[in-house]
Image (cartoon, rainbow, N blue to C red):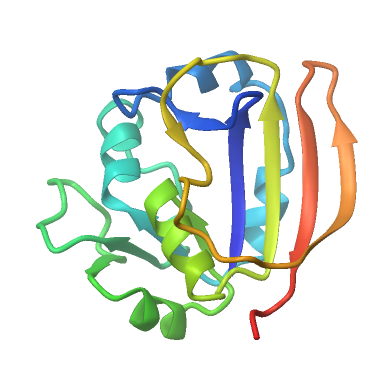
Length: 168
């Protein structure tokens, strides 16, 4: 499973209210998203992330990408037919072992279970001061991350790519 996510310099992926407005300033920058999506077999996303994005932007993923939203609630109206729900990270991981994992809580759950093998983390040149952290305190377990690449963009964003060793 893989992470592809942006964080601020102070480590936040969303504002205190779950807002993703800070990403708007970077919407025209090509961060290699299409290449990343072409290399995954599905999407596993948290409900809060879905709600933060879907209301303003609709469903932004390819219709060919199977998706599982981690929730026990019904999906919003108008969701594509290939989008399903699950309450079990383990079930979702078995269905899509090479999935794009999105959403802070879901990423943390996958890290704790040792399911994440690769990460692309984009550090944006802004401070939010408060919000939802990429790695909440006390949620992850000790793991060995190996930097496999780093790239800076003219907008000031830095991308770091990691391989993550399985937990023992």
